[in-house]
Length: 233
Ligand code: DC
Image (spheres, helix red, strand yellow):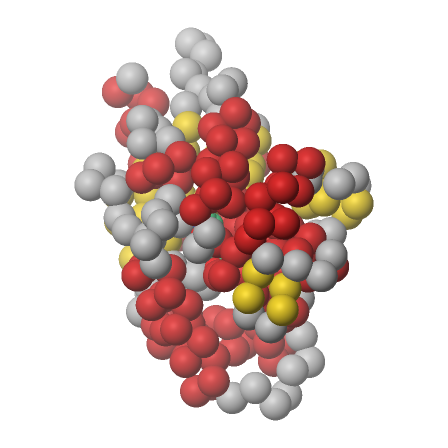
């Protein structure tokens, strides 16, 4: 059998659409590398929190600009083969998912020089192709030439319900559905209206609305799309 061409797969979309779950599953199936770019913005945010660069919601941008080139963010698979995030050699996978970081990450992700540095690193990771990358600006800014672009969406209510179920599953019994819904719509607003690389659908992206799809159905949808693209190349 002819060896299939290795391509770049860009998966963008709103928060809580299950982008990373589907991106990871596809990367595993194709034996591709997987990069979670949200984790990179989260790691920079954690660095700022731990090094006193935040004063409330204000970041010391001058200091951040000085230290950013020295901050290293890497990904390494754990014992089960799942990719985990390292900040300056330290495993920060669980810390970057905490509310402390989630509350501040959109501030860091809106800073132009931070985005330019992250995009530079992300482009370097794609040199060898064979990569699935998920984020907000992958198909528009990082890899506008990606062979496969997917834009994932689902209704705000469905996404809030998924987050709400996840929180209840983790033992959170106090956060209400309305609070989660508010947080989801607020993040949509911030992500789509910021001046630097706002979340928007690339013209040549394939839209996946997974409001009423099971995980198995969306995995199959992605695989069918991948096959149609590589068979044409
Ligand atoms: O996907 P996530 O929730 O881990 O993303 C965290 C934050 O980073 C979120 O506010 C959106 C932002 N982000 C971004 O601006 N560009 C990306 N390529 C990835 C994430």
